[in-house]
Image (cartoon, rainbow, N blue to C red; front, side, top):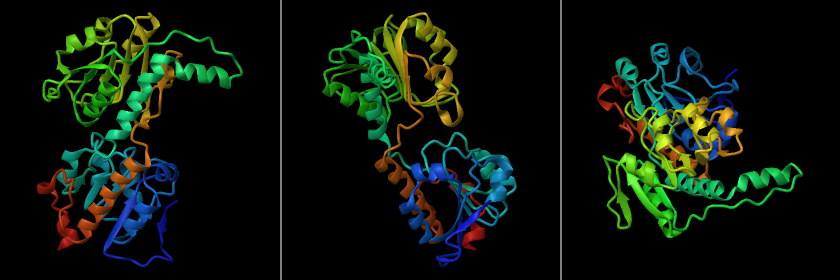
Length: 344
C-alpha cells in the first residue's frame, strides 16, 4: 500500500511529484525528516509504504504519475522500470554508486540519471581503521565471549605501529585512511596504476608487491570488469602468512570461496569486511559467522554527517529540476529527452 505524504496537510509546492523508494527502515537510516521536508518545498512526495524493496515493474507501478524517483541504493534502476514508467523524467540515486542503474536503458527511454557526491570519506576511513584495530587485537571476539557469559582468553595481538599497511586503490577513502595510518606510526604502500600516491612517506608499488609485503591489506579499488575477483586464490596465497585482509570496496572484488579457504588453512590471521556478495552488498553470513572474521552490514557511510550530505544532494537535484535547471550529478544529460515533458 502506498501513501501520498502530506496529502491532507501539505499543499502542493510545485508541479513535480517525487517517489521516494526507501522503506521505513531505510528511510530512518538513510534519509530522514530533514530531507523529506526539503523535498516538500519543491514537490509532492509519494513514499514507499509497502515494507518491500521495489524493483522492475513493481517500482514503475508504485511510482506511477511521478516524474522523479529518488532511489535508495537497494532499489535498482532497471530497463523494465524505465519501460513501464511513461511519466518518469529523472531517476536520482542518493549515493555515488550507480552500478545497479541501467544507464543505457534510461538513456534509451530519455530518462535522466543522477548520482550524489561522496560524503562518506571520513566515515568509511574511520570504520576501516576500527576494523584493522579489531582484527589486530581480537576486540570483537573478547566482547562476544563476555556477552556470552564466558571469560575470554587473552591472546597476543599485533601492534599497528610499525606494521605495513597495503592499500589497493587510491581514491578519497584510501587517501584518508593512509593519512590516519601514518599518524599512528604505520608504514603505507599503495597500488593504483591510475592514481599513484604522491604524498611523502607512501610508497607506490605493484599489485604483487602490495600482496607480498603488507601486514594488512585493504581493498579500496573501484569495481570494474577488470577488478572482478581481483582477490582470488592466487592473491591470497601470495600474501604473507599471518597477514590480515579488509574489504571496504565492493563484494565482487573478492572471491569469497578463496578467502574462506585461506582463512580455513590458517594462512591469513583474519579478515574484516563491510561489504560482500549478499544482498545490498552485505557480507555473506557464512563468512561473517567465523571467529576470524569481523563483519559489519555495509554501514561504512552510516553516520549522520555522511547521510545528510547525500540526502541533501538529492534535495538540491529536485530543486534544480523544479526550477527547470539541469541538476548537478547528472550522468546522461544529453540523453534526457523526457525533461521536455517537465520543462515544456
